[in-house]
Amino acid sequence: MSRIRYFTALYAAKLFARLLKLLHRNGSHYPGVLALKICPDFLKQTAKPAHILGITGTNGKTTVTNLVSDALAHSGYPLISNRAGSNILGGIATTFVTAVDLSGKPRTDLMVLEIDERSSRLIFPYVQPELLIVNNLFRDSMKRNAHSEFVFDILNASIPASTKLILNADDPISARLAPANERVYFSVDPQPDESTFEPNLIQDLPYCPYCGAPLVYDFRRYHHIGRVHCSKCEFASPEAEYRFLRIDEDRAFMETPNGSLICRRIETMIPDMYNQIAVTAMLSEYGLTSQQITAAFDSIGIVGSRFQEKMIGHVKVMLRVAKGQNPVAVSRVMDGVGRYPGRSAVLLAMDDLRDALETCESNSWHYDTDYEFLNSENVVQIVVGGPRALDHVLRLELAGVDPAKISWTLTESEAVKLIRTESCDTIWLLRDTYNTQFAAQDMKYLEEHVEGGETA
Image (cartoon, rainbow, N blue to C red):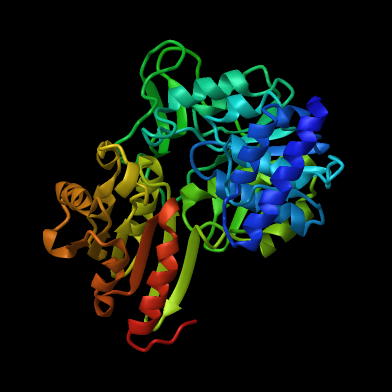
């Protein structure tokens, strides 16, 4: 009877997925939700590919998943992946609906899965990755994954014993996961133009997790990411097998267990290079050669929905997407904007679209976010749009931003029209993961109204 239920769920989910595609609907988790409703142990019963590679962590997992998938595909490996980032239970089930044929047999030997860290307790009992990247652990939205210790405990109790971990040596939280598991570490060395300590508001690990003594940061790249040791016991950052040693404008020089490697740099900011070194580690651990990895990086890039650059007339337009209500992710974007040379105008629209309908009333994440990075002489205008515009305006003024630089509107789609395009060299479109549909409208408006109108 259970197999009958399984195949009923599989066929119904496949049919539903086909219907959604015909209707041009992007409901990537709905077929999996249907399958689980018909057959609650669908993930247990479904056949698995021979190799499953997993990616989880607070920030960067969609980027890393897409880079790993693109690199493997470029190297000739057929695979199935949940590229769209549907990473909770229903989305994972949808990926397995896609991964098997009508007889229930896997269509490929390889699957690359982005896995939500909080959902891991529901997924890992049935889906046990061969390799698992944990990029980092930070506090997240109060509505999602809350504090890093909360998420750490979930992952620590859920990671399968057979899984080999690929961990960030510069993150003293995630580096401690599942201590009995086989593991390798990745790291990014301090670069000559980096400051030794970044003045971030959030510091999720000020004390030793073992003895409670104050931690000493030998180097702090941002928040709690860096090199650390305990002032009392032997706790310290582990040494990494995969390291970016030096990063130039276009190239990155790394050390791996297989020797030195020079590859194309695909991230713009140094803190984001953790994504690329994590991808390198996974590809190498899976068996790709240095030549295959280098060739892959020559051909792949960051997915356009998260990162875009475009010249429109005399202005460079930069789209950056981060998870709204996630103070660390938004702080990273603001840091990059504040450091960028030339005159920048910023469109700040980081509110989840659901804020207008079902948000909690807490805007505490604004006060964990480093709006102070936007208090830069390089930033000549900030336009705020969306249902929480005035909350953002207040936080900007508390960060010391000159009110004369700030414009705002509660109508998010109208915000781009307030940008003074003639007074800037760069326009930054800072949008939340869930309101990127406005980015295309922004680009279209700018193409029509920026002086000159030519695009490149």
